[in-house]
Image 1 (cartoon, rainbow, N blue to C red):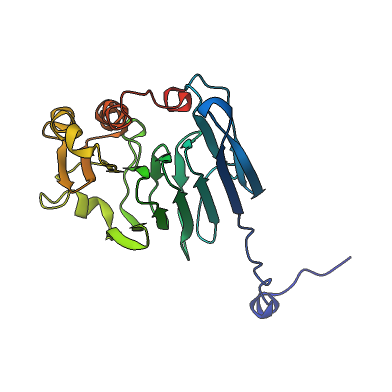
Image 2: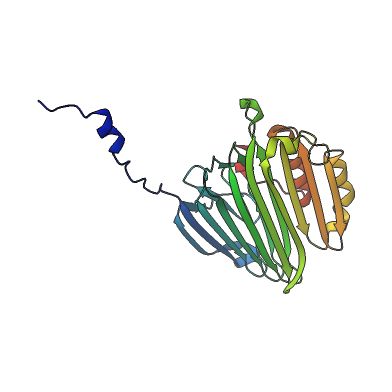
Length: 285
């Protein structure tokens, strides 16, 4: 019969070595090229790891739509995603995410997303992912860089939600850093850096920050037609944020109590910025 260990022997037992938890990485790249009769066709596609790109059938009059997926089901510390999109000359490319991206608790580090966009001469690229949802303790560092030709059009929108109101969730602690750098013909035309960390719920409650709102979105349109849209955009936003015009750049900010309230403003806003064209179908699923 084997004797049970004594209390002293228990005290001398060494803990098992902790192994590093598995993390997800993904890289997805897509390029569009002009086809016959003015339509846009797929030029190249690469996907690796948890990054997937799908090309659903659409009725977008020759435009190319791509849907981005993160098969890991969310992100936490140590996860890495990289997306690259290249709209070739005389093409129209729209990218959206299949669903909202989720930022789960990150005990020791930060999830990272790197977005790189290129828009050639007489091309249009619309970057329209659905919401990023941050859970309590989530952490994200995101960078977006874009290079535009002189007569190219770019629309970027990034919505974020701090906890799901319908589930009674709050984000007491978290970390978010968002850096955008947009260049046209090599000249920097837009730069912004957003940082929110520490006591997220407490900071969002401040009147100078968000007055208790838990959902926000930034949409920026770079195009010569921006000025003609300013009045209509301000009508849509109507007290939920603001819109400013800087030469050929229209910057829109939105705040809302929750994700549903944000969408009620954001969807008509994006349709207007897209010249009346509807959003990809995944936005309505």
